[in-house]
Amino acid sequence: MGEMNKLKEIVSQFIGEDANVEIKPLGKGHINDSYKVVSGDGEYVLQRINHHIFKNIHELQDNIRRVTEHIRKKLKEQGVTGIDRRVLTLIPTRERALYYRDATGDYWRVMDFIKESKSYDDINPELAYRAGMAFGDFQKMLADLPGEPLFETIPNFHNMEARLETFREAVKANKAGRLDEVAGLVKEIEDRAEEMCKAEKLHREGKLPKRINHCDTKVNNVLFDNDDQVLCVVDLDTVMPGYVLSDFGDFIRTGANTGAEDDKNLDNISVDLDIFEAYAKGYLKNAASFLSGVEIENLAFGAKLLTYMQTVRFFTDYIDGDTYYKIAYPEHNLVRTEAQFRLLQSLEENFEKMRQIVREAAAQ
Image (cartoon, rainbow, N blue to C red; front, side):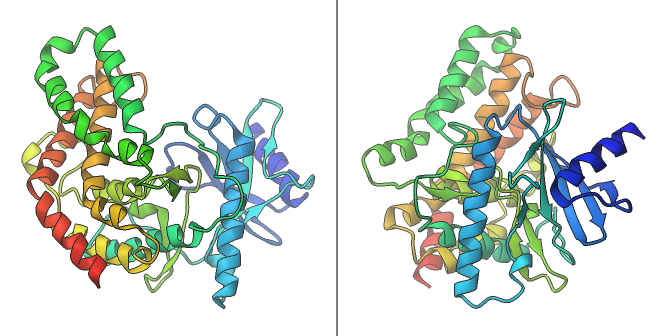
């Protein structure tokens, strides 16, 4: 019972004492532990924030506050009703803080629970179109966020140059002695390295701006109502400055793969162009109004870039001896690497088609 009393004690810091409060585990997040809280005055989500991944909780929570307040303001200006279901609401502690640190050094936050909502793990073109609209609208609303840039909650998260530097250090160190068996794959990574650093180069030349990105654009981070209309985008921990290519590309990487991320059968893996097209249309319907020509021209490249980046990340971990990603069996990171690389090859084969789809969607 100790654990439950501890959770009740933490919840009381936010919503006061309630003898009848009920707390149950919620969802299966990889990063944070979540609970659903039902009390006399409402329903909430309690989360333990993983401070090993997010090292600066104060700045993290301030990002989320700034983002949600700005979206709320935009929704009010648009005359949207039921705003509390259209944007996350942070609940402050009784001391007006946006998080609570317990005696053991763990960090906690509470948000309103969005009722009568659902999310999907599987995808079809219709959902991809709606998710595209949701993420496009999210970026559009935040394109004019006032004040300083947002804090980078995970520094260099989508910086390809930094990821390659880490990869090359891993290759040099060869900690797990695995290099001989994967030399061919190392060459494939290096052969593409220069092209894949294009975004950083365009940014330095002043041609590709940094904007506010979600940085985890999976379909299950969009909440839908019971009629499958978009309510809002959730999981805002990684919202930070970046290139829109990242958000577009990561959705395609995760949503438009006909196989699994760790598929052992590489014949299962290819890019699903119906999902690519649906997402591009939905995204550009809302985002075309604020994107530059250079951004639109490189959206399809974003799909290659994020798939390459994830290949490099899995591969780096394999060469290092599996220190970052959880693995289910010894070769798991190599299987993931090869599966991502196969998706990259499919994107390369279909690249001109993808660019054409984006051009047509932008023209509409």
